[in-house]
Length: 194
Image: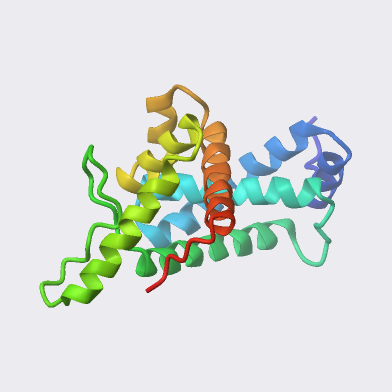
């Protein structure tokens, strides 16, 4: 006799009560659909993997904090989170110039625009110098992940392979690096805008 299929809402409730395996069942049940959806927007396997991981980190955090309310279906809610993270990715990347892929990591490499005037270049160079100084204040493990991610444009999967830690540990270090950068900027009252 076939085992009855447990509804998503029942699995969510079980997970909230501490039954970790329930989340694993939910992820396996919906992985293909969510992964395909993200890939259809970004057309990049590593990026899809990163956004997929971020989606479930957000799902776990929301469930653990008890902030999930059963308004609609679980899958619709997760798809909304994935969709928002895809939008965030595109917003961020249209705003932030890509870093050069070099060992010297000259961050925020000046946009390839020959018309850039001298004053703007000076301001940009000043900001680059400030950011480099701030990064030096970070703990080594956080600095390493930040450099790999933003300067060398590696995926979290590649970073975890290079550093020998799990993807989740890499993601955690990245989050702490960004939080610490924000705190340092606030504490030292550094203005990073022209």
